Image 1: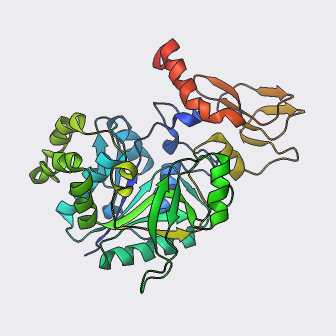
Image 2 (image 1 turned 135 degrees about the vertical axis):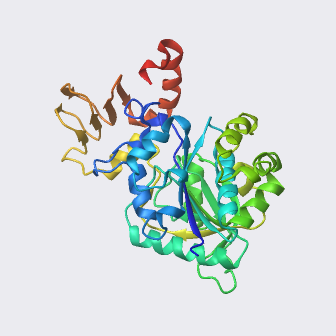
Image 3 (image 1 turned 45 degrees about the horizontal axis):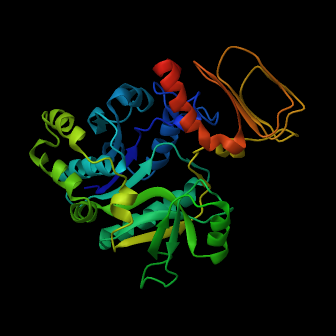
Length: 361
């Protein structure tokens, strides 16, 4: 029996990529880099190299279930776990863990976001495979840490103990997690040599994650444990619809990983980006002689440099005199914004919602 599983988390809205990413079609369902595949499809195809389709689960919001079916027609429909509302990553992971435990009590599980980009597929697969071998033999909560290349302020950081783990190559004990530091602290982290970027990719066996949830996030554990008899039956969807509103809105990082004592990090470097901002997209595209990058057609720029232009509409975009801007023409809105202030876009979306409702988001 194949005991390796993967859970792809695909329920987010991706508001930092507004107005291309919308509530109706968020970024995981978009070909954000012009590869010919959506980010969800890229993630699935990457993981399908080592995990069979019957052991891949996608957790998504109920409103995106049909989109998942459309993008991943080869995925068994029973493997799409639909959340009736967003409750962050701890409930999402708990739901998937209980479902997998019912099906395979010895399961080892990969947890991955659906919207990250990875350039070195082979190193990624080798790293994941090593982590799965470790969790088969040890009750470790493993996260993949990316060797930092710059003082990035948009990522979380993991500090690790430099001591070797007996008999296990490269694995390090985690000291602390730090969320999105300022540039000065990020530079200090890099200079110290014992910090990694937090990739948000986790590997563990099913008993280890459930024991960790029971100890550190007991309300979430108890909520899903009540449905044990329903998992894998016709009563599962009704149970989930009833209990999800009761769930605490809490991330797996805050709820478990920052508190547990059996947390380890496996350092890796496989060309990872969480594609969390327009700048990260700009960095993955090939620039012209002025540092500009383009997605879509019908674009003309003059005296413009270091800017990203994304044209998904039918209109022609002409720009003059811009430096370090993002121009994104989506289905219902046009964004023209300095890349240096792009962390504000999430709050801009909230302002648009308050002033004009959901029609433009």
